[in-house]
Image (cartoon, rainbow, N blue to C red; front, side, top):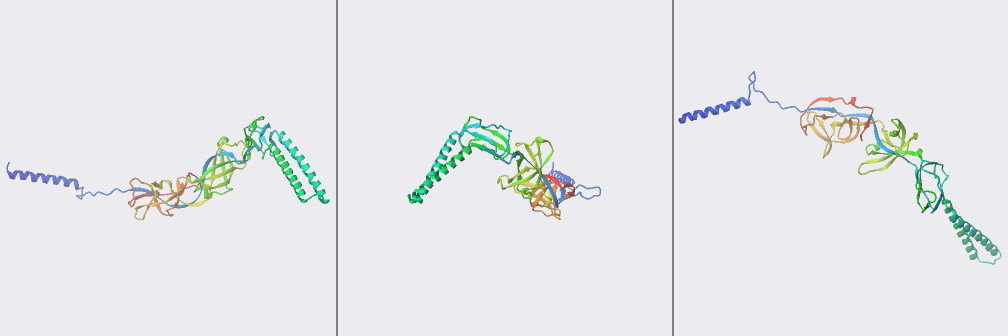
Length: 367
């Protein structure tokens, strides 16, 4: 094959390749114009940030316990001679619950009483002698001191004797019995426990965001699982001043007012707290995003570009969440279409959600 023929074949092959590439890159439409590639739009759903006056209901759980409960201890050692009460027995304030054998203390008290009488007679004798100038002031002082010591000893033994009669400090029910008649008990032994069933209450834990909305005396509703679905009235009796530094929660004491029939210490209770109507800046919960840097939303700008805005979330109200910092009413934020979304990207909103229909006057919160 000649040199000229090889050159011709190579030129023909090159022209064929160029023609194929041209067909792939610039296809011709029916009108003869080239088809242009258009970038794909990023579709998002947006909503308007609004300020709403809402009340919130928060359910917390706890266990019932008696606010007024006391452990009965003895202040004298000795043998128990009287203990008729068992768990569940009612007791009346002031009645004797326990007696200890008191024979030895009674004998010592008799002796002290006799010493007191003797000291008083001796003092009177010294006083008569002083009137006759037959004794000194020092003798009268010693006689007076001896009488004072005897009176003090008598009073001490009288008090110890009274300690052998242990009385109920208030009316209530015996909830624990730890001794039996005939037992010899040391000082400060736990013998009985008494509780007042009319002081049933429960302790619940509330977050640092909820606590400022509560105050002592606020009414609440309490449901006791063992008594069915009926709600019983209660009241916030006390709010503890310190928070748990780990959970950022505080303790709120709820008193049953009045205590319903059938309620007992240890039962499971559910407390519903209702806050006053407060103006809050709200967005839907799905609009709030979280990562290692914290909470944020994507705010839509006038040119349809999104900007990442750090925010601070508050309490949840139904499907919405309060924004404490970072947004203002009237701004628009993205609540759907986050896949592939990034700072500064231009988006195409498909609608603005009407959130007013999603808000209720009372909604449970998870905070």
